[in-house]
Image (cartoon, rainbow, N blue to C red):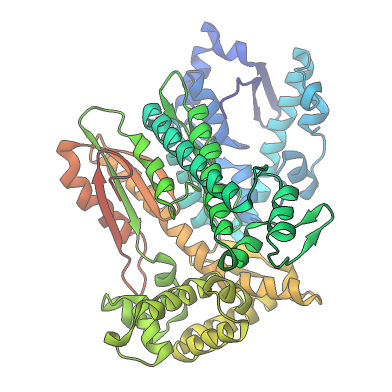
Length: 551
């Protein structure tokens, strides 16, 4: 997404044009560049999102994207592993396009071919897109996906491109200071681990760690691999109650991951020209419809550890006197579940703004609100989110550190209390078996061929996916709708505030002081009205001098 383009190709009926990128940059190509930048000149292509980014970094604007074969392919089957143009052509019975690897080579053998060969390849790709588009449009219409494509995903692609180009300032000094703090904490943990072990060893070596834990300290070994004892996170969590050293190792691993991925990693991603990081949003990766990001991946900044949350202190406004403003949906997936299932208890709880985890604890444990203690609420919260993510009794037992039988009992009590949810879960599995797929409220599909598998584990996973995809996918659709509407509001109102990031259920903006009050009202209003459900949507908003303070 930041590479130098090789060339440009255009296909009209019966005519193909192709040129190396230097030609597009030449003075004589000004009319062509104007056409590319004209939003009224509609263009169809393949991965126009990346094309717009790459061209922008080289001073050329691409506007007027009306259809993207990659985006359409993703909507038509979001579980497909490969959306290459060659693969799409094969799917629709089109021939003549060579793969990029065949033309350029790969890895150390990558080389740009002679101009005539390059242009011939690009021209055939453009022609392939021209022939693909009508076939994909027909399929989108047949699947009832026109609204999803034209009113959500295609406009969102432009919104994301704007956010990516805008970027967000990362204060390198704050990151460096955090790095020093982490180094100090990591050193302290290492000394503690060595003290318990009675010797120094390589904590990052699975073999050496296994020998210390299981041979020297005599902790119960759960399972062995070909190279020695398993010391993955799941094993260590189970061993934590047996020895203080295990908790230190878990903490060490978390801090070491923060150090390598989010301290050293973030510093590498700051562009010298802008002083910002420009994350690259991927619209065509997650089967649920959620966005993912890379270079850097800002979706996975850990927030459970305070040290992880502190990383957000480095994300600051790009203008002096501006603020960071963050708004996130409150329990959006549970609200979607209430709407989709029509469960009376869940619906009533959200309509009366009752704490949903307290409500669940009351119903599952059969107590009054005043009798719900911290442990009950924590268990209810785990069950609530477990239901959304299709958790099994085994998964819940691991989460709550209880027996599988107790976890199964919790889940049964939940379904007895929320009968509408049980009915929804049963009905959606039956429907998935009949149709072979499930949909979100906006008709996003996810195909589930394994739902008829004879293998129990495969079939069970598909059934849980059938239950949670409409919930997770609809939640993803809602925040995308909010982003498209928010972008429109900012432009139409002539506001200087900028939308910078989307992280799960949260939107992050930079806002001038004189627009703070407007944005504090506008952002939650737009988010809460993105779609009409049987229960109210709720968005919490905060602001501060950095992203950390805006939480």
